Image 1 (cartoon, one colour):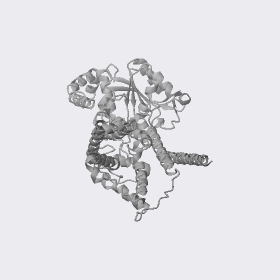
Image 2 (tube, one colour; image 1 turned 135 degrees about the vertical axis):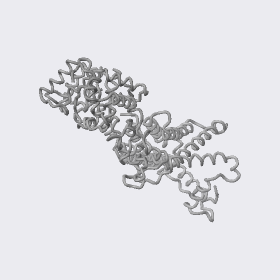
Image 3 (cartoon, chains in turn blue, red; image 1 turned 90 degrees about the vertical axis):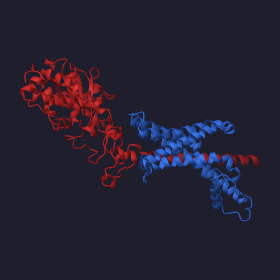
Image 4 (cartoon, one colour; image 1 turned 180 degrees about the vertical axis):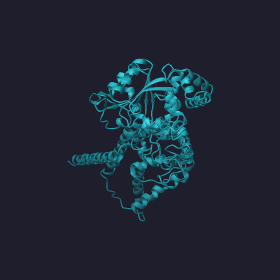
Length: 219
Length: 354
């Protein structure tokens, strides 16, 4: 079995199994926890729970005015690499084919050049995020292995994918295999590291939004 | 032709001019990626050389490789090959049969001990002693070991001989293996393909006859001159790949416009061969030019790589089953862990009340 056969077959299968298992496990174990009933009386004019949660989610999309200057770089840079990652994952024809194999749906792809440009910008943005983490004293102090490894497993598929699609330095079968293995690593780490925020963000912001909107607070 | 006669003398006798030989030598030099000056050396060496004794063994195969060679459209290739070599044994092409045919093989082995080349097409059955493919009362395995013992070199023609090919495909009921797994003490050149490009074989034999050594080989023992680049690297549809323009089917607008066939399963990016440059049928076309993706037939295990029409970037496994099973397990563990927490909480509440 060649490295590419291993990557396309057993490695991806095992990684997907770990990913799905981990996400289901973590989400359900959180969702099914015993919830304390909110016995407070709702503030007059408090919106319904769902509306409160939605408003909170929308408000969190941009920092409040007083905090904006200090967190402008983090916010903008965060958007850049998140949007970049979405363009790469959902825009490249090869990725759409991969997803089509999993879920059976597909959509038109973006031109390869556009996705490659997005990948370069995303890489630069992720490097900038790491640079800030390493140079900001507070951020550096609270950073753990989880943060750095989550960054690493995110950068790796972008970098290896860019090299593979450009056919640089090594035979394509090797580049593609390394790229797929890096994706497998990402999938395996995803449910157990900070990347899980991709799912948990909806849970936490909804809960926070409901809690505070009931009390008349807008956060 | 007398065995002492050189190739040059034979060509003269058959009325083939020196100009034709030079032209052919230049073609071979180009084919094998040699410098232009090598064409004169090839012509001189070929003219002075005696014909190379070749024993051709056909094992578990479909005769497509022989068909490919004998139906070559390139001018004089077929003729030149049979002028370059003394084909002393070939079950499909020889006139004699039975004991006389076997005698021809044994005579060639005896008379050219240590000098003859063995060409093999087809994989070798090894299961149950190799009984699944026999000839003249002997298994392919026995014939190969017997014939290869005093050979100069071996050439595995076609993917079956080179890598096991279709007989080797899962579940491989005959225990088929490539020649290189049986013969490990002699040089084995692999000219893979299903079938291989005839010029690849002609060029390799000419190189052997001319220089008396093996051409440069890749990590799978294939001549680099032929197998140095991927189909994708030399494909005329490559610009469409780079732009992200892909045919979604075999009869859609993209297919009609000649866009890249990656999405319909083309294996060109991971297949090393010269189809895109040498082409087939006298340079008329090759599979991609005819509208079908490359199957990757010159690579090991091409039959078992997840399907000809599954794109390279797609997983080859059975993700639905795996993901379904993993989801069920995850849901089960998630529910169990939540119930465990609830029980702990209930116990804690009871304790605090008591």
